[in-house]
Image 1 (cartoon, rainbow over the protein chains, first blue to last red):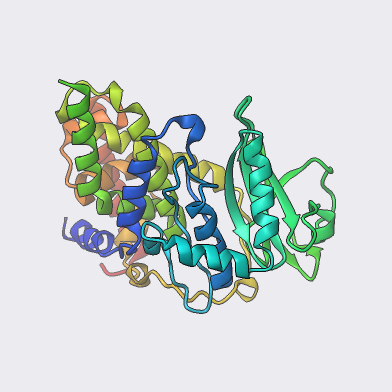
Image 2 (spheres, chains in turn blue, yellow):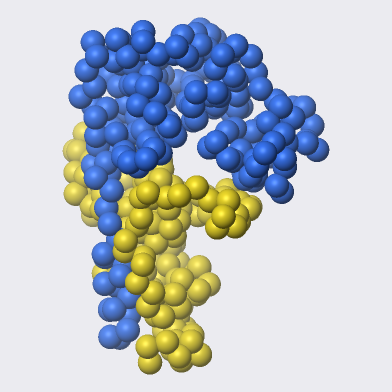
Amino acid sequence: MDKIYRAKQIYTSIEIPPELNSIVASAIEKSKAPKNNRFSYIRVLAPCAACVAICVALASHGFFSDGGNSFGRIGKEAEAGISVASEMPGANVRGAKLAMEDTPYSTMVSSRVESEREKGNELVLIYLDENFASFCTSSAEDGTVRYSNFRQDTGEDVSLSELGIEGYPDNTQFYIRSAEKIVIVDNGTETELNIVGGRNED
Amino acid sequence: MLKNEIYNAVVAYITENQERFYRLAYSYTKNREASLDVVQNAICKAIEKYGDIRNVSAISSWFYRVLLNEVYAYIKKHKREIAVSDEDMPVQVYCERAFERDDGIYDSINKLPEQLRVIIILRFFEDMSLEEISKITETNINTVKTRLYGALKKLKVFYEEGGANG
């Protein structure tokens, strides 16, 4: 049994992320909201502080919430690898508004978000960088989940072939996970593909 | 018991034990973001369904069941992820230090069939009784015992074959 207890030491030494507490508190708070007005979480892999500010701003303006209280968890993959989730509950609305006005691509994101919300769809922003944004929407009518991906500069949808991925039908569901990876979603199963130089690395 | 009382008890339980939930999720996903997702989803589901609970003493086994279901759902969903070579991976700034130490027995536990592995984790890592494990896994207690002994036997075999730390 000594060996098992040694294994337990490894298990109990798993580091707890500092944002766990705020995530738990947010999940509890958000789950009290009616389901059709609830937003699961924001998960953004944002390469820069401006992108993070957009999400904070959108949340503060009620785009992702049911009453103006921001909710979500933001992970920031940047040189510092810092998670900013702990800043979410106390996001400064005025500061976030200014950040949103300053950012050139915030308008495209917010207009797209607003368009989806007008249809009553629940929306999750799952990826955002200076070129692309990926959303997951849950239809208000039948709960169908779909993904949409669009260019930041034009607001136009981006296709798999434009990302250098060939061999999939036009209606293939996918989302962008990072600058190097996309995820094909097929009947709930996710397959990750690398994008290197625009070629399909599958 | 009043529904409100159960709700408050559930919330208190979740808040107090969140680190344990994260560790359990991480032991399966080996990924920080995924583990946070799993815990978050489990909490959302639990809050939705707390009305199913009839008394406070059932909260622990009930929530662990919800959490494990979320873990399994995550694993099932992501099992088709394609492995990438090291040179294609971006430089990772964040490093989960706990798993730098490679102990043969820990690897051996991870290699167990899931039915056995979960019992080892709940019994020895989460310090649960066999009765609690029986409720969480919705398995007869005698079956839990059988699986526990089976797992310990297998671990002895794995460990000796690995010849790691002896």
